[in-house]
Length: 293
Length: 303
Image 1 (cartoon, rainbow over the protein chains, first blue to last red):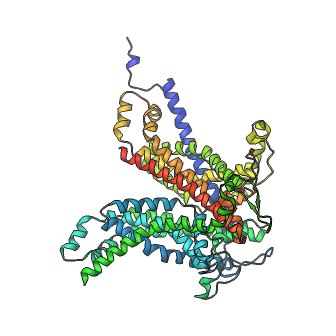
Image 2: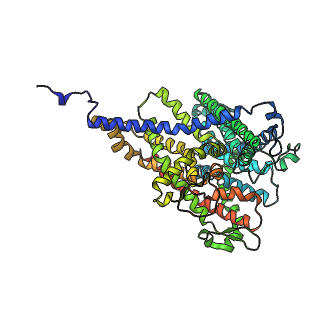
Image 3: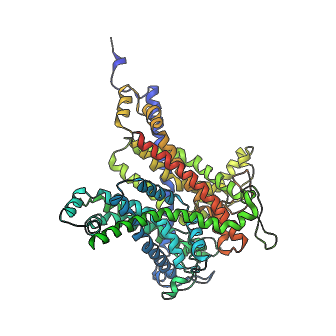
């Protein structure tokens, strides 16, 4: 008698096997559909953007509406300035806060609440960060529409990322390293500043770089804090206190005007932003693969 | 001396840690403070009235259409992104393909989240809207009897393409968190189910998804919070019309788009009204995010 019922082989046409293949097909389809927009965006931004890449793009001001030629140099400089201001505020703030969380808090109640606040802050919509910076700095007249106001808004958005990545980076540093430092008589601050932080620097830098790339693409918080300008930024310190162009706001402004040359500049700006994100993400990927300890 | 420096250093780091909470509180406080004139003038009726008239002397502000638009555009995005995201998460967490191929795929999905919103907006205007237009026409022609598709598409911006762009932007969150929740399940569960003779998909449907359910729900909530706050891509393709329409083929508006569009040129009571709308948005996203945070943390505690 054949023991076909006891065979360990799966029959590919049994209803259960068909059910399995069907859902495997659906899951693969989901994967493909998810990736379509990514490639569609990359291809279109690549095709439309690369055509505009030339020296003028990086050295010239944008042309008046309807005219062609010109570049987006002022917006590139403006993005550098606002993002730098954001980083100057958020990096020391975030790193020191993370030092407390990982080194001194011993996971007490305060640390629990601070980590919770960090999570909540990372969920705050980016436009709310802009409204906050406006209400704090512009509406009160402390500074006008300016690179500083924009930088503060970006700092709010960068802070949670920096706290989280630094916190994680510090916790990976082995306890032995701290004990060794304490053992030779180092104080807490010496241990942290000279031993623990340097050991975690590569991971912290990765987090900071990702936060910077993210901030460079942020638009919503900038449209009513940094505003926009068609001209070169003034030399500092005046330049920090005036409205300033940024790449992301340029893309927004030029995407919705009916002039072809402006739209082309918007694609070029998008390409630069996408390349920035791509390059930082890939480098971060490669960098975190090498462990320091 | 050294001891004092040391104490100061610890206090300094504590101050910065507490500063994060302070920032959060001051965001709420400053927006509420700036919104105060509008809160006093319109009270809660702001949430339920529909006119938005910034003309001096006849000013009237109500946020119902934008609150409606925020909720509906987020719901559309969830309807599209939830099945896709969970399907992708299953594909990436179970052993369908070798790890060698899975790692780059996970990275690509994450990349989807990193592309700036404004780039999606530009792409949406010039690529997505023309592609979606025939689909919208088809929906209207064949399903026009459903109120959701009752008006012919105006040819261009609207709630429908905005919902699609939002779904693209929240897909990575749903995928990442569902994948984490599935991957965090103890291998015993899987082995026990397979050992009882269940097939791979029987295991997924009857054991893994129920076990990871709360984590997946947490991820969906987080995505909802993101969708409600998302600004640029939506602003560029939703049409910015302050009107409630059942048909999703019509242009609409969201809270964040309203703020993005009007804030830079607003003055007086309009600023207060926009701040009030911002406060509503902040409260909405806070509630959703805190709930999501709670659900996700419960899951970690479970296993």
